Image (cartoon, rainbow over all chains, first blue to last red; front, side, top):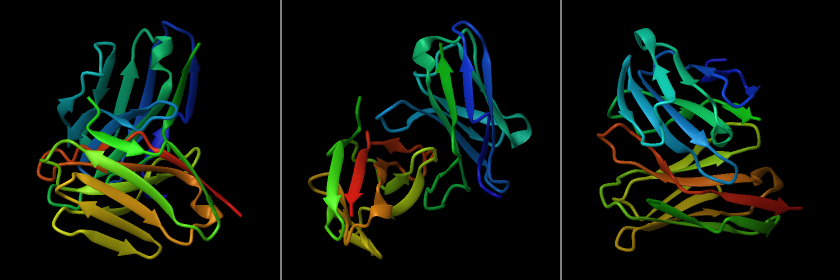
Length: 115
Length: 113
C-alpha cells in the first residue's frame, strides 16, 4: 500500500493523559498536513509541514498540541493533558510540490476518544 | 469564520435521480475548488475539482458548476447510485500558498434503491 498511513487507528484515553499519533505520508510527497474532524463537520486545518519545516499552525492548535516531522519523512502529533473536547478524528494528508493541482491525499485517520 | 458554506446538511435521493449539493465561498483569493468524498471509516478522497476560469467540469456522472460572480459552486451527481452514498465535502484553496484546503461542513448523501 503506497497511500498515507496513520497509527493508531483508534485511541481511547483518560482525561489528562498524553497521546501521540503517527503519520507516514506518500514517499515522494514533501507537504504534510494535519486536520481535525469532529462528528458532522468538515476537516479543520491544524498544521502544515513542507519537508521538516512547520510553516503554519492554526489557532485551533493550542499549546497542548505539538507536531513534528523529523527529517521530512513521517510526522507525529502529540496532545498533552488531553481534554474531552479533544475527542475527534485526526486526519493526516500529504501532497506533492508547489504547482500541482492541489490534491491532498488523506489517510484513514486516528480516532481519539477522551473519557 | 466559516469561509466555505455548504448545503444541504443531508440529502436523500432515489436511485437514478440527480443529487445536487451547493457551496458558497467568501474569499475571492481562492482559485481551486475540489469536492471530496468520504465513506465511513475512511479519509476524504478527491472526487472532482474545478478552477474559476471555467464554468463547468464533467467527469462521468459527476459535474461541477461554477458561478464566479456569485461565489458559488455546486456538485451534480447524475443517475445517483446506492454506491454514491457517502459524505461529500466542498473545499477551496489558494494555489501558490500552502495548498491549505478549507472545507465545508459536509453533506451526507443517501441514495435509496
